[in-house]
Length: 99
Image 1 (tube, rainbow, N blue to C red):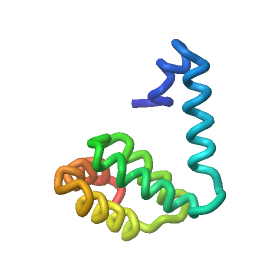
Image 2 (spheres, rainbow, N blue to C red):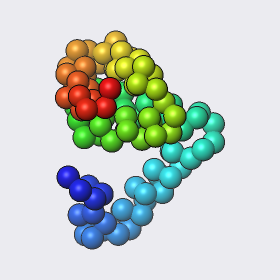
Image 3 (cartoon, helix red, strand yellow):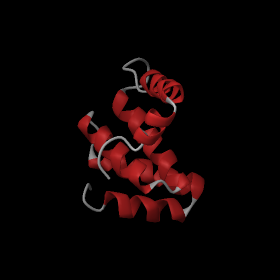
Image 4 (spheres, rainbow, N blue to C red):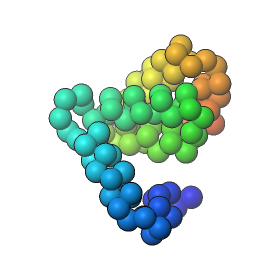
């Protein structure tokens, strides 16, 4: 998949897309929790929800923001503890070329 997966929403409902974009900017600001850890938290949540593409993209963003591969795997451990082994399978598929 190339480009923003929300381009369909952007085209069909620009106002909704704007709200989603604002939420992302607020969530992933440089304030408070360091950005790399915000991405790791989101990655663990996506793993628990079965969002493989989200896991892949967020892990890459976390690493680009300074997270280590070991920290990515610690986040997978948290997803496993909270949501079970299914989240590990999602993460394994998503991370096969990353860690």
